[in-house]
Length: 333
Image (cartoon, rainbow, N blue to C red; front, side):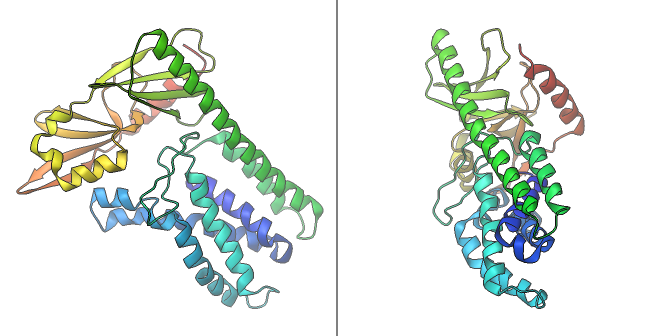
């Protein structure tokens, strides 16, 4: 999830663990704990693109990381907060739950997380977009109410529990909505006589009303969208896999690693003799049925006996157009 959401979750968890003892300091250190796992993004400054992708939501988002570093961070905080009536065990407990709930929440997004690192298992339930105001904003309101209550006030506990309850309930609701959307896509494919190998569904940005699906067939991928306000049948756009365009590069180690990361959901495009590896998991850059650009695309650049993988930059204008199109599409086709 986005940084604000993880800060809010971490602060709320910190309050639940140690709020009665240290008041708003529990919110502060909980927010810090909720931020720490995402520092893995700094890897992009020190390594190549493929390695940075592999490291993101890897070690720092694992149970192992939480267990290993919670006592270390707990000890550091206990040295800073010597005057408070707390022990390093108290702070270690707060840090563990702040560090651990971060990847648990991330597991519900499209990117997922390697919660059981070093085992090669990525959890990605794909039922909530990385930024969802309906999850974050109510949670944030309750957290702000907590801030203005005295440490011993019963209202403080009440508001914090409500924030956790409302946000968690919404998360469960999105799982239900995902199930309904899956049935709608499946029924539509059957009605249109489309045989498919696999289907991957997820919410579109910033909402849980409009859903999209990637459908794998023998030689193409189909992409369709469904809003709970739709009144017309789902239409699917076709995108050829073009895996053969890789040629001898198909067995290159970096390409093999990219294939593993995207779990097989990719297409290859060729433009002006340049090859691009497109990650289908995050969809297209717009809702236009003629759109061919994907949100995450990587240029394959041969350099001698090796290749370099570079992520294609995104344009701000594309983001603005996508937001406008999403708002219109959410209300039905």
